[in-house]
Length: 180
Image (cartoon, rainbow, N blue to C red; front, side, top):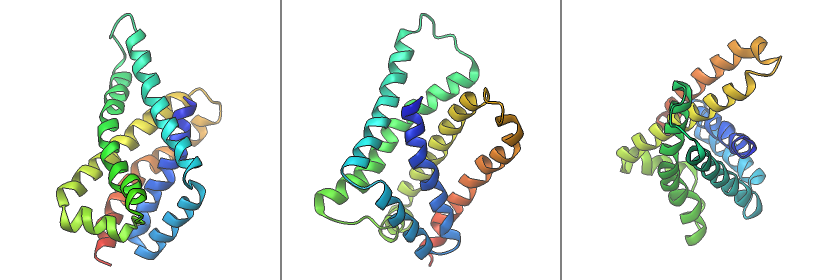
């Protein structure tokens, strides 16, 4: 669970940052640089990578240890989304962080947006699908953890609105900023 929470601390601001494309490319880029300062290489990126791998491998191990594959629908949904994330996120990470470090290139939003939405729009569609899959997986997991907390029911409508609106604005923010 905690490995997933660490990943969530990266994913949530990252997805929120895409919504800033509705304001301007410069705001989006400023947030990217702020996040880069927090998740700076190599230590923090390594922590994030290890948290992601730990989360993925522990979920596979938990699935392996089951005596039956009979699981509730929500858990089937959660496991299925989690399995889809791994290959999709590898393409994203290799194409941004790893490639950038190998060739010494800062993969700015200007570069990524021009590649994803102008040069290779199918990649943009794939990344959009990945964003929705990661977002759904993250919030299903958080919901089934937080539902046991006393305060959660009082905040559920606000959290639900955030969960629904944020990916919509995020997906709108990326192509809009491509036109800026």
